[in-house]
Image (cartoon, rainbow, N blue to C red; front, side, top):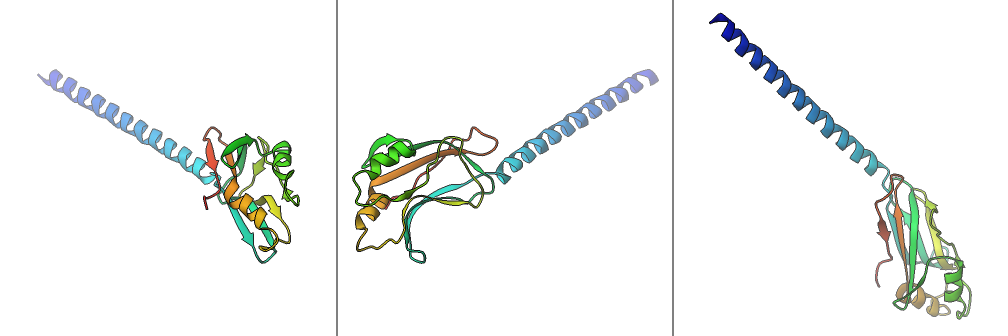
Length: 168
Protein backbone atom coordinates (compact mmCIF):
# COMPACT_ATOMS: atom_id res chain seq x y z
CA UNK A 1 0.00 0.00 0.00
CA UNK A 2 2.79 2.36 0.84
CA UNK A 3 4.27 1.99 -2.69
CA UNK A 4 1.00 3.04 -4.40
CA UNK A 5 0.87 6.21 -2.38
CA UNK A 6 4.43 7.03 -3.49
CA UNK A 7 3.48 6.61 -7.18
CA UNK A 8 0.48 8.87 -6.79
CA UNK A 9 2.49 11.61 -5.11
CA UNK A 10 5.25 11.28 -7.76
CA UNK A 11 2.61 11.54 -10.49
CA UNK A 12 1.02 14.59 -8.88
CA UNK A 13 4.46 16.21 -8.49
CA UNK A 14 5.33 15.47 -12.14
CA UNK A 15 2.00 16.82 -13.42
CA UNK A 16 2.32 19.93 -11.23
CA UNK A 17 5.87 20.55 -12.49
CA UNK A 18 4.68 20.16 -16.10
CA UNK A 19 1.77 22.59 -15.58
CA UNK A 20 4.09 25.13 -13.96
CA UNK A 21 6.62 24.77 -16.81
CA UNK A 22 3.89 25.22 -19.45
CA UNK A 23 2.56 28.25 -17.59
CA UNK A 24 6.04 29.76 -17.46
CA UNK A 25 6.50 29.09 -21.17
CA UNK A 26 3.17 30.80 -21.95
CA UNK A 27 4.15 33.87 -19.85
CA UNK A 28 7.54 34.02 -21.56
CA UNK A 29 5.99 33.84 -25.06
CA UNK A 30 3.41 36.49 -24.14
CA UNK A 31 6.10 38.81 -22.80
CA UNK A 32 8.23 38.33 -25.89
CA UNK A 33 5.28 39.20 -28.16
CA UNK A 34 4.41 42.25 -26.06
CA UNK A 35 8.04 43.43 -26.12
CA UNK A 36 8.25 42.92 -29.87
CA UNK A 37 5.01 44.88 -30.42
CA UNK A 38 6.23 47.65 -28.10
CA UNK A 39 9.51 47.88 -30.03
CA UNK A 40 7.63 48.12 -33.33
CA UNK A 41 5.36 50.86 -31.98
CA UNK A 42 8.28 52.78 -30.51
CA UNK A 43 9.70 53.37 -34.01
CA UNK A 44 6.40 53.74 -35.89
CA UNK A 45 6.37 56.63 -38.36
CA UNK A 46 3.26 58.73 -38.93
CA UNK A 47 3.30 60.73 -42.15
CA UNK A 48 0.81 63.53 -42.60
CA UNK A 49 0.26 65.54 -45.76
CA UNK A 50 -1.02 69.06 -45.30
CA UNK A 51 -1.92 71.74 -47.78
CA UNK A 52 -1.55 75.02 -45.98
CA UNK A 53 -0.77 78.68 -46.22
CA UNK A 54 2.08 79.76 -43.96
CA UNK A 55 1.58 83.46 -43.45
CA UNK A 56 4.67 83.95 -41.31
CA UNK A 57 7.02 83.08 -44.17
CA UNK A 58 4.58 83.77 -47.06
CA UNK A 59 4.69 80.22 -48.38
CA UNK A 60 1.78 78.06 -49.48
CA UNK A 61 1.78 74.49 -50.66
CA UNK A 62 1.76 70.81 -49.84
CA UNK A 63 3.92 69.63 -46.97
CA UNK A 64 4.75 66.14 -45.67
CA UNK A 65 5.44 65.83 -41.95
CA UNK A 66 6.61 62.79 -40.01
CA UNK A 67 4.79 63.16 -36.69
CA UNK A 68 5.73 59.63 -35.61
CA UNK A 69 8.57 58.24 -33.54
CA UNK A 70 10.59 56.53 -36.25
CA UNK A 71 11.70 57.06 -39.84
CA UNK A 72 9.23 56.55 -42.69
CA UNK A 73 10.56 54.72 -45.72
CA UNK A 74 8.63 55.66 -48.85
CA UNK A 75 7.58 52.64 -50.90
CA UNK A 76 5.33 54.32 -53.49
CA UNK A 77 3.56 57.54 -54.41
CA UNK A 78 0.45 58.10 -56.50
CA UNK A 79 -0.52 61.48 -57.95
CA UNK A 80 -4.02 62.37 -59.06
CA UNK A 81 -4.94 65.57 -60.85
CA UNK A 82 -8.65 66.32 -61.12
CA UNK A 83 -9.37 62.73 -60.02
CA UNK A 84 -7.21 61.14 -62.75
CA UNK A 85 -4.09 59.18 -61.80
CA UNK A 86 -1.13 60.70 -63.65
CA UNK A 87 1.91 58.95 -62.15
CA UNK A 88 4.25 58.95 -59.19
CA UNK A 89 5.55 62.05 -57.40
CA UNK A 90 8.68 62.36 -59.55
CA UNK A 91 10.15 65.00 -61.83
CA UNK A 92 8.27 63.77 -64.93
CA UNK A 93 4.88 64.02 -63.21
CA UNK A 94 5.76 67.37 -61.65
CA UNK A 95 6.76 68.70 -65.09
CA UNK A 96 3.36 67.61 -66.48
CA UNK A 97 1.55 69.38 -63.64
CA UNK A 98 3.57 72.59 -63.78
CA UNK A 99 3.90 73.02 -67.58
CA UNK A 100 0.63 74.97 -67.99
CA UNK A 101 1.05 77.03 -64.80
CA UNK A 102 1.86 80.77 -64.90
CA UNK A 103 4.79 80.20 -62.50
CA UNK A 104 6.73 77.09 -61.52
CA UNK A 105 6.39 76.14 -57.85
CA UNK A 106 9.36 74.76 -55.94
CA UNK A 107 9.24 70.99 -55.55
CA UNK A 108 10.75 68.06 -53.70
CA UNK A 109 10.36 64.55 -55.09
CA UNK A 110 9.71 61.41 -53.04
CA UNK A 111 11.09 58.34 -54.77
CA UNK A 112 10.72 54.79 -53.43
CA UNK A 113 13.37 54.28 -50.77
CA UNK A 114 13.38 57.92 -49.68
CA UNK A 115 13.42 58.35 -45.90
CA UNK A 116 11.49 60.96 -43.93
CA UNK A 117 13.03 60.98 -40.46
CA UNK A 118 11.00 61.48 -37.28
CA UNK A 119 10.14 65.15 -36.85
CA UNK A 120 11.10 66.08 -40.41
CA UNK A 121 8.87 68.42 -42.40
CA UNK A 122 9.32 68.81 -46.17
CA UNK A 123 7.50 70.97 -48.70
CA UNK A 124 6.66 68.73 -51.65
CA UNK A 125 5.13 71.55 -53.69
CA UNK A 126 5.06 75.22 -52.76
CA UNK A 127 5.22 78.84 -53.81
CA UNK A 128 7.39 81.35 -52.01
CA UNK A 129 5.99 84.85 -51.62
CA UNK A 130 2.45 83.51 -51.84
CA UNK A 131 -0.27 86.13 -52.25
CA UNK A 132 -3.94 85.12 -52.22
CA UNK A 133 -4.73 87.83 -54.77
CA UNK A 134 -2.04 86.80 -57.26
CA UNK A 135 -1.85 83.04 -56.68
CA UNK A 136 -5.43 81.81 -56.34
CA UNK A 137 -4.70 79.44 -59.27
CA UNK A 138 -2.00 77.76 -57.18
CA UNK A 139 -4.14 77.39 -54.08
CA UNK A 140 -6.96 75.88 -56.20
CA UNK A 141 -4.46 73.36 -57.59
CA UNK A 142 -2.96 72.40 -54.21
CA UNK A 143 -6.13 72.35 -52.10
CA UNK A 144 -8.72 71.04 -54.57
CA UNK A 145 -7.28 69.50 -57.72
CA UNK A 146 -4.03 67.77 -56.72
CA UNK A 147 -3.84 64.67 -54.51
CA UNK A 148 -0.54 63.03 -53.61
CA UNK A 149 -0.80 59.69 -51.81
CA UNK A 150 2.33 58.40 -50.09
CA UNK A 151 2.70 54.72 -49.15
CA UNK A 152 5.39 54.06 -46.56
CA UNK A 153 6.63 51.65 -43.92
CA UNK A 154 8.72 51.61 -40.76
CA UNK A 155 12.16 50.06 -40.34
CA UNK A 156 10.44 46.72 -39.75
CA UNK A 157 8.75 46.87 -43.17
CA UNK A 158 5.59 45.43 -44.65
CA UNK A 159 3.02 47.68 -42.89
CA UNK A 160 1.83 49.48 -46.05
CA UNK A 161 0.86 52.73 -44.27
CA UNK A 162 -0.71 55.49 -46.41
CA UNK A 163 -0.81 59.25 -46.09
CA UNK A 164 -3.09 61.52 -48.12
CA UNK A 165 -3.87 65.21 -47.69
CA UNK A 166 -7.16 66.04 -46.01
CA UNK A 167 -10.04 66.87 -48.30
CA UNK A 168 -11.11 70.50 -48.47
